[in-house]
Image 1 (cartoon, rainbow, N blue to C red):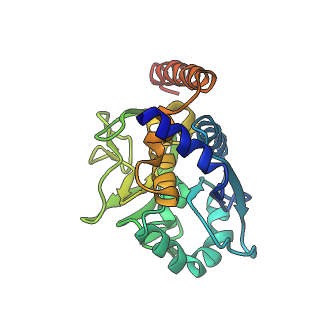
Image 2 (tube, rainbow, N blue to C red):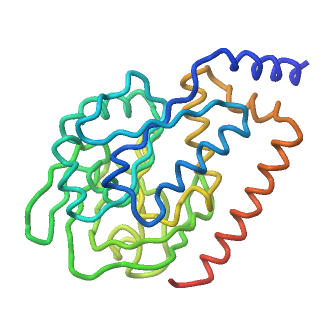
Length: 268
């Protein structure tokens, strides 16, 4: 009976609106392979039986009426400067969505601007939107290389960091994970990496992050699907997967494991 109910859920979703995934500032904040996060989310969502639809938002564009997930990438300092005014203007909308448990993943430059502020090397303070209780100060020395951390909810997380900003967490944020090496992670001192609040994740992990870390990808999809279609929708869709989709998902998981192991074995 449960499998029959799950199949009915799959069929019913065919008449429902698609999952709306927003790529935030794709033009200016999309380096080091961050667009791979979009590909990973959409492919896995399709295999689970959802209909993902990606919308790209850049300064001056109309804001979508409905958003189920937001993905943002990294960029150079000049990229941050190009989008900062628009980001502040959309700050209230983004804070409301975060309060409403819309899952978000922000990489590097947007991770910094989702905090309270980013202080540049010229000592200019770029005020962020304050969704994450963090602040960042630019330094001359860069932290570069493949990075492995342990995350309480996701296990081993592997990615590639390349940043000179030192990010410090306040009491309202929890780290995404912990690193063992000195000179790595958020600031090279306290062994934290990334930050979390509700269903918002900020991290320095490029690489792309999601293809190598399916547990985080599924966390984002589950949060979006359950919020949009009802509690336990993701679990039901996963149970009702057909054999072909399940086999492809297992193949992707195997590739993710291989890629993360190779990356973890190489310092750069």
